Length: 184
Image (tube, rainbow, N blue to C red; front, side):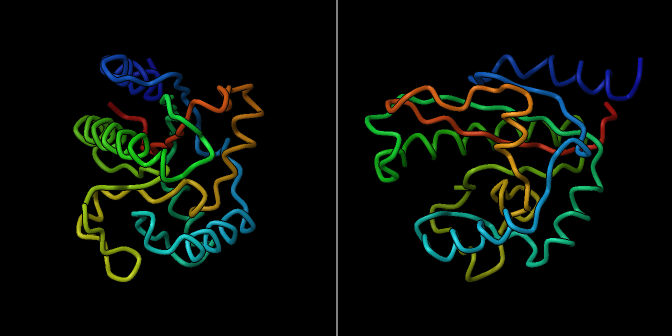
């Protein structure tokens, strides 16, 4: 059995204990990274300011790409939440926080089994009074920067694999990528 097969089997031992909708195993080389996505993420972070608890990614696209390339495997999962209006960020806040808790729980499982990982998601929400981006993250080993802050073109990944990303106006769907090196 290859290292990737062993690590996938290790993930399958626990992932169904969590309320994820779909999940996919990828190679990091299958992710599309672009400086334009990173730039849009930086503009988005500036526009939303302190409304989002988001640890910052490295400033340069090249550094983000180099970090991602340190990992061989990617685990993409989503979770779907019922909301009144998926386009109302304030109304989706509870779902976002619920997803952040799920992300941290699954990331902890990955860390226990595989060691060093990189989690990229929607928001971090580890700390009620998040110091980011004004100050350094209190828990850099557990932080969850956004997928786009690393330049990952997640919509291309979803479309290329025919992954559902719209369940209607009364649902919020959040995606997370966990990168690791596939040894169990």
